[in-house]
Image (cartoon, rainbow, N blue to C red):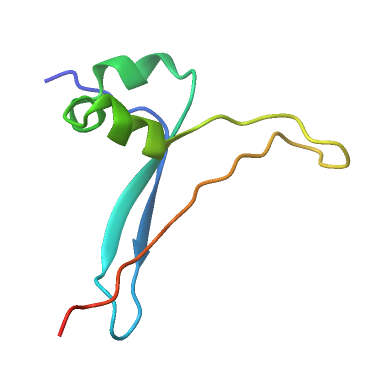
Length: 76
């Protein structure tokens, strides 16, 4: 009850011959991150992989960030 999720984006990435990946990207600095039940289940190292800092960039009208996604080949 009363759980409010922080802003986040869901990603589902798939390719034939690779393990499907479903993940979420969170935004650094959001106050709700500290209370998010899903994010807090992750280790600190895992959290660092899914929390992205948005920064102002020359020539762009809005802050931007980079979220690296890696999928693995299926083992045969």
